[in-house]
Image 1 (cartoon, one colour):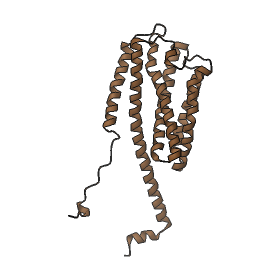
Image 2: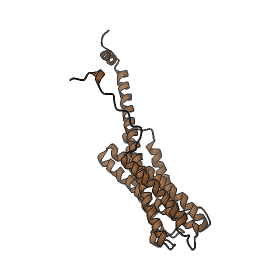
Image 3: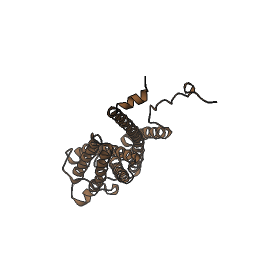
Image 4: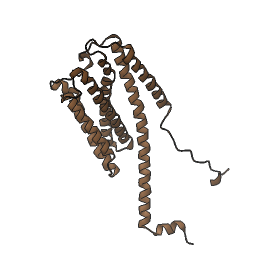
Length: 261
């Protein structure tokens, strides 16, 4: 039986959420993990002999900075792949990873400043690690601004991809700055931190690394899906604008569509 237009099934309702079974699982794990790390870090784990309770910031600061590196390199890799493939997926992934990196870099700077006050006596010093991290944060903010620059989409993506690649050298400087220049900041690796990490403190730090990774994965998936929807909407508006422009340039098109009266 042939289906007439009036009998056709109604179009599916547009999606109102970027959630999926995977993101719901990640979200639940993130919520439980944050509560667990909060209890372990603030209640269960003991204070440090020297730094006392201020050492508890390690459970946020160190994982945030570590996953910041991952997000930066993911942005750079996706930028490189976009320059090779020129597909929307890589471009959206680069933009999503850059946003996660921006949040983590800001979190690292804030927690580092709060931790520095009782440790160094000031919130900020022009230490090599702090200065290079601040420069990375400014570059990431510039990346976000470039993504919103009113330009042709391909040109904007190309400029963003180049800047995404330039994030890697600065991230390398951030990582090795404590080895290359003498400063107040502790050495780069956890094993060299001037804090006795063992027992419950080490377990809490390990859990905080895992939880931070799950939270970042949850945010990345959602941001990628939002970015993909934004890209489709942008393409739709661009196609509609081009169609209107062609119609304005060819008045006879309207007569052809409407037909003779």
